[in-house]
Image (cartoon, rainbow over all chains, first blue to last red; front, side):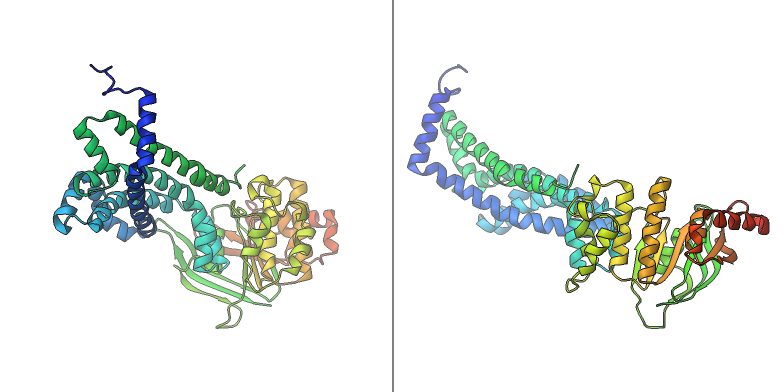
Length: 224
Length: 240
């Protein structure tokens, strides 16, 4: 039963389905929609999370106050946030994006907060005694130290956002990868599910190789 | 040139008082060495002077009132930004408008011209210390604070860096407060030695060094002076 061609299709079959979906424009369209949602929620969650993370890392009082809240939000199941967003704001695009951001934000905050706690006080003192401006301190002293943490938040963030966006689409959108996968599930169309998954993984690999890796190499050039 | 007047009544950390009733005045252009046991609070004092630490009772007066003399601070560790090259590290402390014509000359004088585009992690400790010294000199300081800048250098390197530093200082004199626990080093460099006690830190005694810079090339003269100090101030034997 498991080996039957519908539940475990041959690679050739999957490739055929993939090609067909590309030709009809179905796959590029839904993948594109999901990518747009990814970019939108990433563009909101990262800067916001970095700003809050730095603030909490550098300010003990704020950190003590928000610490429990942060743990709470970090552990609220994604599904709960998504359902609540749809119930409160309606089945609209903004609610979908907000749900993804709300899920991702605590993650970014925690990673960046650890980074800004670990900032080298000696170097900060040096910057202060030589009267570095705020901007100079941020660009030349703080950012290079936070960079590895931002990269970690980016990588884990992309993976997390992908996963959450699909659930968001499955529950309340009429396009995107999540919506399509839901459709294929109802039709038991495993070949299509695999074809979409491959497209998905390929995009992430492309991002990693074309963007993240070169950025990493650039940032590590000073290391021995 | 800038005078320094220090009057710190009390500086404490949660567990203990570090400095109490500490008074010291430096003339403009004077080179003063602070000598004291390690952990007695010398670095804390320099932090108070540089403005990094403001939580003390008393006052520190640098120059005339309401002036802001430029302070070059050479820390115990070089504290270079590892992700910026040697040259970038120095340029960062300068204002954007300043064109560092003299920077090449400084790099050349410290034998660092060849490594100016390298990252600090590839430098030896002696080189890193020299970069830190240039960084402090590059801003044309009115006051120079130095916190054991030659510690953990081997003797020849320390001597070389020390001579380079004295050369620079003689080219553009400014008031210097130099912290060390090496008496030989102090005698070779300072106009005046200030001996400190620990727990809390206070001035024990002050001794002027009566030799010109040229006379100090003579090692035996300095060694005699050290012996003379030893017999003259038996209470300082821990420091000497």
